[in-house]
Image 1 (tube, one colour):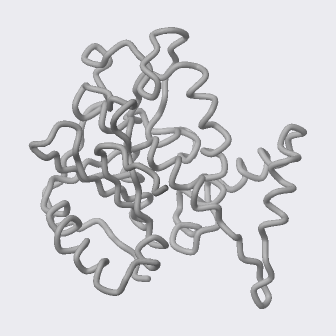
Image 2 (cartoon, rainbow, N blue to C red):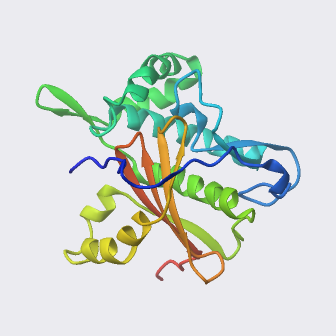
Length: 238
């Protein structure tokens, strides 16, 4: 798969850190107003220290923030092993921190699960990635970015965020990726680029006339893309 690069000829928009005065004083995920903390989008642990001072933050309650912490660690680990991103300078800088985190006593279960997901691949090993966990992290990022962009949280009772990755596109019927590219990705790329964290994270967004419906393109380290959406919840097939 071709690595995606930021088009340096396009107009770039660098936004300031979220103005917390304009955000609701409630959790981005569950809307509670109790025990609020700061949630970073993307999770701050995917950026090496010293971290940039323009990371996006929104309010989240302590419980919801903690619920996403283990998946965020898993996301960081997968970025460090992903063939598109593992050699990115920021990811290389993260690897000692990742190794230290795996040596913590409380990481024993995480490490055991990691080892069982490694499969021989010639002279190397390949990680069998749990894409459900990856998508969950990216969905949370989209949900936070929606609040950051609009000042309004998604109504979680009726709406949700959804994600497509490179792997998702590969499983689609032959004509669907092209249709997705023509109908969504190409128009998204005409929107201004929002750059953060010393260009380690970028996103594009387009909002529709339908409330809470939007499309997103996310790019990590200039190499790994995801497509996200917000809209009404989709009922599971019976």
